[in-house]
Image 1 (tube, one colour):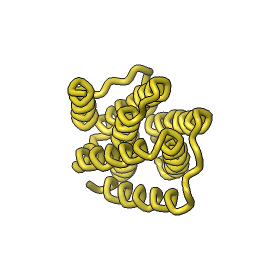
Image 2 (cartoon, one colour):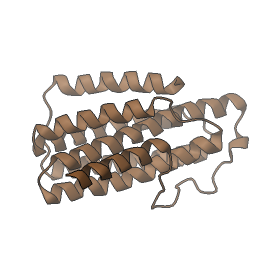
Image 3 (spheres, helix red, strand yellow):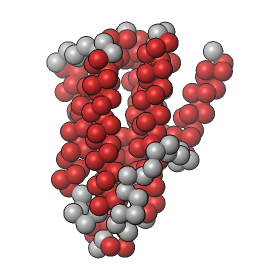
Image 4 (cartoon, one colour):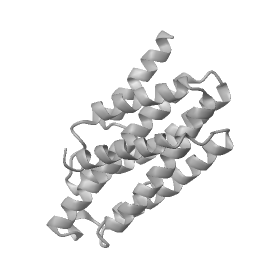
Length: 207
């Protein structure tokens, strides 16, 4: 138990400190230098990528918490693999923020702590509910990323390439959660999730 808690704490520190390293190549490699964007476009792209980076902070927290909550070793491995793939997103969005001269959200520790608590709660409700929560989360994230593809500057091919790959990965993670036994969540919960996500995205856009 102590080892597990230490690993969880180490993962949390790595996630919020911005030292994550991607296992896969950056989708946007050699596409669109930041100086190709006008000042307002660069600021707008930076704000959107900050929001996406916060989403990946939350994804790490959720998967770590749900992996800790399950007693099924196969499901635990499933969550850990998804977290590793989401870690690529975390590293990619952080790199793009640096390229755009934008900073990550100042509230990242808060976002992580809140998402970790939600992940623990979902896990306590059973594996089927936990997987259903993953599926619904990924479905909403996929929609969110699709909206960002519409809002990112056309000239920002780098950010668009990252977001497109993230969107494909999120759809796959959602499908995998359903295939692993996830169940649909009761009607009020998805609406509450959307409302909470909206508060997070509006806040992270600026802070």
